[in-house]
Image (cartoon, rainbow, N blue to C red; front, side, top):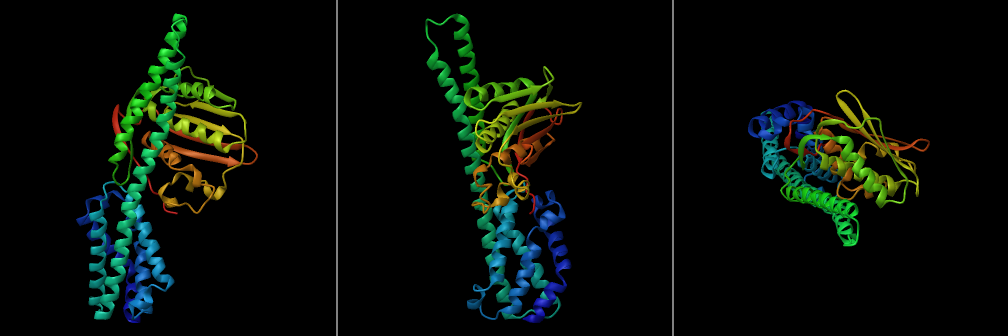
Length: 380
Protein backbone atom coordinates (compact mmCIF):
# COMPACT_ATOMS: atom_id res chain seq x y z
CA UNK A 1 0.00 0.00 0.00
CA UNK A 2 2.89 2.35 0.78
CA UNK A 3 4.36 1.92 -2.71
CA UNK A 4 1.00 2.76 -4.34
CA UNK A 5 0.78 5.86 -2.17
CA UNK A 6 4.25 6.99 -3.22
CA UNK A 7 3.40 6.46 -6.90
CA UNK A 8 0.33 8.71 -6.60
CA UNK A 9 2.30 11.46 -4.86
CA UNK A 10 5.21 11.25 -7.29
CA UNK A 11 2.91 11.45 -10.31
CA UNK A 12 0.44 13.98 -8.90
CA UNK A 13 1.23 16.71 -11.46
CA UNK A 14 0.83 14.33 -14.40
CA UNK A 15 -2.35 12.86 -12.89
CA UNK A 16 -3.93 16.32 -12.64
CA UNK A 17 -2.87 17.20 -16.20
CA UNK A 18 -4.37 13.97 -17.56
CA UNK A 19 -7.55 14.50 -15.56
CA UNK A 20 -7.86 18.10 -16.71
CA UNK A 21 -7.38 17.16 -20.36
CA UNK A 22 -10.12 14.51 -20.22
CA UNK A 23 -12.50 16.73 -18.27
CA UNK A 24 -12.18 19.56 -20.80
CA UNK A 25 -13.04 17.13 -23.60
CA UNK A 26 -16.02 15.51 -21.87
CA UNK A 27 -17.48 18.31 -19.70
CA UNK A 28 -18.24 21.55 -21.64
CA UNK A 29 -18.77 23.65 -18.49
CA UNK A 30 -15.18 23.00 -17.41
CA UNK A 31 -13.82 25.14 -20.25
CA UNK A 32 -15.20 28.28 -18.59
CA UNK A 33 -12.84 28.00 -15.61
CA UNK A 34 -9.14 28.74 -15.50
CA UNK A 35 -6.88 25.70 -15.01
CA UNK A 36 -6.32 26.60 -11.35
CA UNK A 37 -10.04 27.08 -10.66
CA UNK A 38 -10.91 23.87 -12.50
CA UNK A 39 -8.58 21.79 -10.36
CA UNK A 40 -9.82 23.56 -7.24
CA UNK A 41 -9.58 21.15 -4.28
CA UNK A 42 -8.86 17.98 -6.29
CA UNK A 43 -5.05 18.08 -5.80
CA UNK A 44 -5.78 18.08 -2.06
CA UNK A 45 -8.22 15.18 -2.51
CA UNK A 46 -5.48 13.29 -4.38
CA UNK A 47 -3.03 13.86 -1.53
CA UNK A 48 -5.64 12.70 0.98
CA UNK A 49 -6.24 9.51 -1.02
CA UNK A 50 -2.51 8.77 -1.19
CA UNK A 51 -2.21 9.19 2.59
CA UNK A 52 -5.24 6.99 3.22
CA UNK A 53 -3.88 4.22 0.97
CA UNK A 54 -0.57 4.44 2.84
CA UNK A 55 -2.08 4.21 6.32
CA UNK A 56 -5.00 1.81 6.15
CA UNK A 57 -5.70 -1.80 5.37
CA UNK A 58 -9.17 -1.91 6.95
CA UNK A 59 -12.09 0.40 6.25
CA UNK A 60 -13.18 0.17 9.89
CA UNK A 61 -10.09 2.19 10.85
CA UNK A 62 -10.52 4.77 8.12
CA UNK A 63 -13.19 7.01 9.56
CA UNK A 64 -11.27 7.50 12.82
CA UNK A 65 -8.40 9.38 11.18
CA UNK A 66 -7.96 13.08 10.42
CA UNK A 67 -7.03 12.31 6.82
CA UNK A 68 -10.53 10.97 6.32
CA UNK A 69 -11.90 14.24 7.73
CA UNK A 70 -9.61 16.13 5.34
CA UNK A 71 -10.99 14.41 2.25
CA UNK A 72 -14.52 15.22 3.42
CA UNK A 73 -13.62 18.91 3.80
CA UNK A 74 -11.81 19.15 0.47
CA UNK A 75 -14.55 17.39 -1.48
CA UNK A 76 -17.16 19.56 0.31
CA UNK A 77 -15.30 22.71 -0.80
CA UNK A 78 -15.04 21.30 -4.33
CA UNK A 79 -18.84 20.97 -4.50
CA UNK A 80 -19.41 24.51 -3.24
CA UNK A 81 -16.96 25.85 -5.79
CA UNK A 82 -18.83 24.14 -8.63
CA UNK A 83 -22.08 25.70 -7.38
CA UNK A 84 -20.60 29.10 -8.26
CA UNK A 85 -19.31 27.98 -11.68
CA UNK A 86 -21.64 28.68 -14.58
CA UNK A 87 -23.36 25.78 -16.36
CA UNK A 88 -22.19 23.07 -13.96
CA UNK A 89 -24.69 20.33 -13.09
CA UNK A 90 -24.79 17.51 -10.59
CA UNK A 91 -24.18 15.01 -13.39
CA UNK A 92 -21.03 16.85 -14.45
CA UNK A 93 -19.60 16.81 -10.92
CA UNK A 94 -20.15 13.05 -10.69
CA UNK A 95 -18.50 12.63 -14.09
CA UNK A 96 -15.46 14.58 -12.85
CA UNK A 97 -14.94 11.98 -10.13
CA UNK A 98 -15.52 9.08 -12.52
CA UNK A 99 -12.74 10.50 -14.74
CA UNK A 100 -10.57 11.05 -11.66
CA UNK A 101 -11.03 7.39 -10.67
CA UNK A 102 -10.12 6.30 -14.19
CA UNK A 103 -6.91 8.37 -14.29
CA UNK A 104 -5.80 7.20 -10.83
CA UNK A 105 -6.46 3.56 -11.69
CA UNK A 106 -4.57 3.82 -14.98
CA UNK A 107 -1.59 5.38 -13.18
CA UNK A 108 -1.47 2.61 -10.59
CA UNK A 109 -1.85 -0.14 -13.22
CA UNK A 110 0.84 1.41 -15.44
CA UNK A 111 3.25 1.39 -12.49
CA UNK A 112 2.25 -2.20 -11.58
CA UNK A 113 1.13 -1.36 -8.04
CA UNK A 114 -2.62 -1.84 -8.49
CA UNK A 115 -3.98 -4.59 -6.22
CA UNK A 116 -7.45 -5.55 -5.07
CA UNK A 117 -6.82 -3.94 -1.69
CA UNK A 118 -5.55 -0.71 -3.28
CA UNK A 119 -8.49 -0.71 -5.69
CA UNK A 120 -11.03 -1.18 -2.90
CA UNK A 121 -9.53 1.65 -0.83
CA UNK A 122 -9.42 3.92 -3.87
CA UNK A 123 -13.02 3.13 -4.76
CA UNK A 124 -14.24 3.70 -1.19
CA UNK A 125 -12.49 7.04 -0.71
CA UNK A 126 -13.52 8.36 -4.12
CA UNK A 127 -17.14 7.34 -3.59
CA UNK A 128 -17.03 9.19 -0.27
CA UNK A 129 -15.58 12.29 -1.96
CA UNK A 130 -18.10 12.03 -4.81
CA UNK A 131 -21.06 11.81 -2.44
CA UNK A 132 -19.79 14.71 -0.34
CA UNK A 133 -19.20 16.96 -3.36
CA UNK A 134 -22.57 16.13 -4.89
CA UNK A 135 -24.38 16.84 -1.62
CA UNK A 136 -22.43 20.06 -1.11
CA UNK A 137 -23.22 21.20 -4.67
CA UNK A 138 -26.95 20.55 -4.27
CA UNK A 139 -27.11 22.12 -0.80
CA UNK A 140 -25.22 25.18 -2.01
CA UNK A 141 -27.62 25.76 -4.90
CA UNK A 142 -30.58 25.42 -2.56
CA UNK A 143 -28.91 27.76 -0.10
CA UNK A 144 -28.38 30.35 -2.84
CA UNK A 145 -32.00 30.11 -3.95
CA UNK A 146 -33.27 30.52 -0.39
CA UNK A 147 -30.99 33.47 0.31
CA UNK A 148 -31.79 35.17 -3.00
CA UNK A 149 -35.50 34.72 -2.41
CA UNK A 150 -35.19 35.84 1.20
CA UNK A 151 -33.22 38.94 0.23
CA UNK A 152 -35.65 39.87 -2.53
CA UNK A 153 -38.69 39.21 -0.34
CA UNK A 154 -37.22 41.42 2.38
CA UNK A 155 -36.53 44.21 -0.12
CA UNK A 156 -40.11 44.11 -1.38
CA UNK A 157 -41.45 45.10 2.05
CA UNK A 158 -40.16 48.70 1.93
CA UNK A 159 -41.78 49.81 -1.35
CA UNK A 160 -45.05 48.05 -0.47
CA UNK A 161 -45.06 49.82 2.91
CA UNK A 162 -44.33 53.15 1.21
CA UNK A 163 -47.17 52.60 -1.28
CA UNK A 164 -49.55 51.66 1.54
CA UNK A 165 -48.57 54.79 3.48
CA UNK A 166 -49.13 57.02 0.44
CA UNK A 167 -52.58 55.60 -0.22
CA UNK A 168 -53.55 55.55 3.45
CA UNK A 169 -52.85 59.24 4.08
CA UNK A 170 -54.63 60.54 0.97
CA UNK A 171 -57.68 62.51 2.04
CA UNK A 172 -60.41 63.81 -0.24
CA UNK A 173 -60.06 67.23 1.38
CA UNK A 174 -56.34 67.49 0.47
CA UNK A 175 -55.32 70.00 -2.15
CA UNK A 176 -54.66 68.72 -5.67
CA UNK A 177 -50.87 69.12 -5.43
CA UNK A 178 -50.63 66.95 -2.30
CA UNK A 179 -52.89 64.25 -3.78
CA UNK A 180 -50.79 64.13 -6.96
CA UNK A 181 -47.58 63.94 -4.92
CA UNK A 182 -48.85 61.02 -2.83
CA UNK A 183 -50.24 59.30 -5.91
CA UNK A 184 -46.85 59.56 -7.65
CA UNK A 185 -45.11 58.20 -4.58
CA UNK A 186 -47.52 55.25 -4.36
CA UNK A 187 -47.29 54.37 -8.06
CA UNK A 188 -43.50 54.61 -8.00
CA UNK A 189 -43.30 52.27 -4.99
CA UNK A 190 -45.70 49.77 -6.56
CA UNK A 191 -43.66 49.81 -9.80
CA UNK A 192 -40.54 49.03 -7.76
CA UNK A 193 -42.40 46.18 -6.02
CA UNK A 194 -43.38 44.66 -9.36
CA UNK A 195 -39.76 44.81 -10.56
CA UNK A 196 -38.66 42.99 -7.41
CA UNK A 197 -41.37 40.35 -7.81
CA UNK A 198 -40.00 39.60 -11.28
CA UNK A 199 -36.57 39.13 -9.71
CA UNK A 200 -38.11 36.87 -7.08
CA UNK A 201 -39.51 34.59 -9.78
CA UNK A 202 -36.10 34.50 -11.51
CA UNK A 203 -34.41 33.48 -8.26
CA UNK A 204 -36.52 30.32 -8.04
CA UNK A 205 -34.90 28.98 -11.23
CA UNK A 206 -31.29 29.97 -10.41
CA UNK A 207 -28.66 27.49 -11.62
CA UNK A 208 -25.00 26.98 -10.76
CA UNK A 209 -23.01 30.20 -10.83
CA UNK A 210 -26.09 32.38 -11.37
CA UNK A 211 -27.43 35.33 -9.44
CA UNK A 212 -30.26 37.75 -10.20
CA UNK A 213 -31.34 38.94 -13.64
CA UNK A 214 -30.54 42.58 -14.47
CA UNK A 215 -32.39 44.74 -16.99
CA UNK A 216 -30.10 47.39 -18.51
CA UNK A 217 -31.31 50.61 -20.09
CA UNK A 218 -30.11 54.18 -20.56
CA UNK A 219 -30.96 56.09 -17.39
CA UNK A 220 -29.90 59.01 -15.21
CA UNK A 221 -28.00 57.44 -12.30
CA UNK A 222 -28.18 60.60 -10.16
CA UNK A 223 -31.97 60.50 -10.23
CA UNK A 224 -32.03 56.85 -9.10
CA UNK A 225 -29.63 57.34 -6.19
CA UNK A 226 -31.24 60.62 -5.13
CA UNK A 227 -34.50 58.70 -4.78
CA UNK A 228 -32.78 56.23 -2.41
CA UNK A 229 -31.45 59.20 -0.43
CA UNK A 230 -34.90 60.77 -0.07
CA UNK A 231 -36.50 57.48 0.95
CA UNK A 232 -33.73 56.65 3.45
CA UNK A 233 -34.00 60.14 4.98
CA UNK A 234 -37.66 59.46 5.71
CA UNK A 235 -37.13 55.93 7.09
CA UNK A 236 -34.07 56.28 9.35
CA UNK A 237 -33.34 58.50 12.34
CA UNK A 238 -29.73 58.99 11.27
CA UNK A 239 -28.79 62.18 9.45
CA UNK A 240 -28.06 61.23 5.84
CA UNK A 241 -26.09 63.46 3.49
CA UNK A 242 -26.04 63.21 -0.30
CA UNK A 243 -23.15 64.64 -2.32
CA UNK A 244 -22.94 64.82 -6.11
CA UNK A 245 -21.52 67.63 -8.25
CA UNK A 246 -23.39 66.52 -11.36
CA UNK A 247 -27.05 67.22 -12.07
CA UNK A 248 -27.27 64.05 -14.13
CA UNK A 249 -25.06 61.09 -15.13
CA UNK A 250 -26.32 59.17 -18.14
CA UNK A 251 -25.25 55.61 -18.82
CA UNK A 252 -26.42 52.04 -19.40
CA UNK A 253 -27.39 50.81 -15.93
CA UNK A 254 -29.98 48.67 -14.17
CA UNK A 255 -31.63 51.33 -12.03
CA UNK A 256 -33.68 48.92 -9.93
CA UNK A 257 -30.65 46.80 -9.05
CA UNK A 258 -28.50 49.82 -8.19
CA UNK A 259 -31.19 51.28 -5.97
CA UNK A 260 -31.36 47.95 -4.14
CA UNK A 261 -27.58 47.83 -3.82
CA UNK A 262 -27.37 51.34 -2.33
CA UNK A 263 -30.38 50.68 -0.09
CA UNK A 264 -28.58 47.58 1.19
CA UNK A 265 -25.41 49.55 1.95
CA UNK A 266 -27.33 52.35 3.68
CA UNK A 267 -29.26 49.82 5.77
CA UNK A 268 -25.96 48.19 6.79
CA UNK A 269 -24.50 51.60 7.62
CA UNK A 270 -27.42 52.21 9.98
CA UNK A 271 -27.30 48.70 11.43
CA UNK A 272 -23.54 48.47 12.01
CA UNK A 273 -22.64 52.13 12.47
CA UNK A 274 -22.64 54.17 15.65
CA UNK A 275 -26.11 55.03 16.86
CA UNK A 276 -27.53 58.10 15.12
CA UNK A 277 -24.18 58.81 13.41
CA UNK A 278 -24.13 60.63 10.09
CA UNK A 279 -24.24 58.56 6.92
CA UNK A 280 -22.84 59.95 3.70
CA UNK A 281 -23.94 58.96 0.19
CA UNK A 282 -21.65 60.19 -2.58
CA UNK A 283 -21.45 59.95 -6.36
CA UNK A 284 -18.14 60.70 -8.09
CA UNK A 285 -18.20 61.07 -11.87
CA UNK A 286 -15.41 60.29 -14.35
CA UNK A 287 -15.27 60.00 -18.14
CA UNK A 288 -16.05 56.29 -18.52
CA UNK A 289 -17.08 55.27 -15.03
CA UNK A 290 -18.89 56.41 -11.93
CA UNK A 291 -18.31 55.63 -8.25
CA UNK A 292 -21.07 55.38 -5.65
CA UNK A 293 -19.91 55.55 -2.03
CA UNK A 294 -21.67 54.94 1.27
CA UNK A 295 -19.80 55.94 4.43
CA UNK A 296 -20.56 55.58 8.12
CA UNK A 297 -18.78 55.98 11.44
CA UNK A 298 -18.72 53.03 13.84
CA UNK A 299 -16.98 49.80 14.72
CA UNK A 300 -14.66 48.93 11.81
CA UNK A 301 -14.78 45.65 9.92
CA UNK A 302 -11.78 43.53 10.85
CA UNK A 303 -9.03 43.59 8.19
CA UNK A 304 -8.98 39.79 7.97
CA UNK A 305 -12.73 39.74 7.23
CA UNK A 306 -12.82 42.45 4.57
CA UNK A 307 -12.23 40.18 1.56
CA UNK A 308 -14.34 37.32 2.88
CA UNK A 309 -17.36 39.51 3.55
CA UNK A 310 -18.36 39.59 -0.13
CA UNK A 311 -18.08 35.80 -0.62
CA UNK A 312 -21.34 34.23 0.53
CA UNK A 313 -20.56 30.61 -0.37
CA UNK A 314 -16.97 30.79 0.88
CA UNK A 315 -18.32 31.26 4.39
CA UNK A 316 -20.30 28.04 4.42
CA UNK A 317 -23.91 27.70 5.47
CA UNK A 318 -22.99 28.55 9.06
CA UNK A 319 -20.22 31.09 9.24
CA UNK A 320 -17.53 30.53 11.82
CA UNK A 321 -16.88 34.27 11.79
CA UNK A 322 -19.40 35.93 14.09
CA UNK A 323 -18.58 39.33 12.60
CA UNK A 324 -19.89 38.17 9.20
CA UNK A 325 -22.87 36.15 10.39
CA UNK A 326 -25.40 38.99 10.09
CA UNK A 327 -24.46 40.22 6.61
CA UNK A 328 -26.40 37.45 4.83
CA UNK A 329 -26.26 37.51 1.04
CA UNK A 330 -26.67 41.25 0.58
CA UNK A 331 -23.01 42.06 -0.06
CA UNK A 332 -22.65 39.12 -2.43
CA UNK A 333 -25.39 40.71 -4.53
CA UNK A 334 -23.67 44.10 -4.27
CA UNK A 335 -20.53 42.53 -5.73
CA UNK A 336 -22.48 40.67 -8.45
CA UNK A 337 -24.26 43.84 -9.57
CA UNK A 338 -20.97 45.79 -9.67
CA UNK A 339 -19.27 43.07 -11.74
CA UNK A 340 -22.24 42.94 -14.12
CA UNK A 341 -21.69 46.68 -14.76
CA UNK A 342 -18.04 45.97 -15.63
CA UNK A 343 -16.89 47.31 -12.27
CA UNK A 344 -16.13 46.18 -8.75
CA UNK A 345 -16.87 46.91 -5.10
CA UNK A 346 -14.22 47.95 -2.59
CA UNK A 347 -14.18 48.36 1.16
CA UNK A 348 -12.12 50.62 3.41
CA UNK A 349 -12.72 50.31 7.13
CA UNK A 350 -10.73 51.53 10.12
CA UNK A 351 -11.34 53.05 13.52
CA UNK A 352 -10.16 56.55 12.57
CA UNK A 353 -12.02 57.12 9.30
CA UNK A 354 -14.99 54.77 9.58
CA UNK A 355 -16.29 52.40 6.89
CA UNK A 356 -16.71 53.20 3.21
CA UNK A 357 -18.15 50.89 0.56
CA UNK A 358 -17.38 52.03 -3.00
CA UNK A 359 -19.18 50.67 -6.08
CA UNK A 360 -17.28 51.35 -9.31
CA UNK A 361 -19.45 51.09 -12.44
CA UNK A 362 -18.67 51.40 -16.15
CA UNK A 363 -21.13 53.74 -17.83
CA UNK A 364 -21.43 51.86 -21.12
CA UNK A 365 -20.21 48.36 -20.36
CA UNK A 366 -23.52 46.76 -21.39
CA UNK A 367 -26.06 47.01 -24.15
CA UNK A 368 -29.71 47.59 -23.21
CA UNK A 369 -31.45 44.31 -22.32
CA UNK A 370 -31.53 41.53 -19.75
CA UNK A 371 -28.45 39.80 -18.34
CA UNK A 372 -28.20 37.13 -15.63
CA UNK A 373 -25.49 37.99 -13.09
CA UNK A 374 -22.85 35.52 -11.94
CA UNK A 375 -21.87 34.53 -8.39
CA UNK A 376 -18.10 34.52 -8.47
CA UNK A 377 -15.96 32.28 -6.30
CA UNK A 378 -12.63 33.42 -4.83
CA UNK A 379 -10.50 30.67 -3.28
CA UNK A 380 -9.41 31.40 0.29
